[in-house]
Image (cartoon, rainbow, N blue to C red; front, side, top):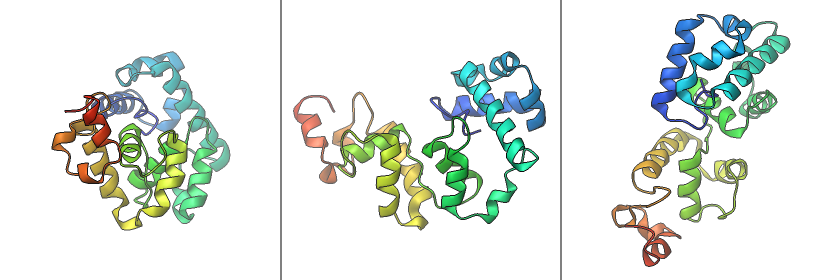
Length: 192
């Protein structure tokens, strides 16, 4: 499901996943399906041609390594070992690995998506030119494990509703007094 969520909304991710599971009830069936059919089934999530091939390659790689399409063995590994395993899969980067750790495995990971990255940069928590991959390395150590899930969810919400990419709502921002970018954005008329 995490690959389906790349570069799309939660609603489109859910639609794509539902369509995929309705069409092919097992991961083996998805792996063996015609890539064009898989792409057609997940089209609502965007980048369907890329995602369909990526999903099938990941499933094939998991089966090659594990002897079956099942990641249950990862539950016995520590977070760093799980992350190392996941990012070694084709098309899986730090954000996808962190999402699997946090949402599928209940671990204290901290995914950095576009909203989290934007808010962290504007607050001055990471350098302005930091990539998402660098942001994972820079932010995670400074965030207490027990608040990572809630902070992740709140930063996404804040990024979508207040600290928007194009026209941030700085006058409504509860973090304005802590924000490195807010005063400049307001002064330039780039924010409300």
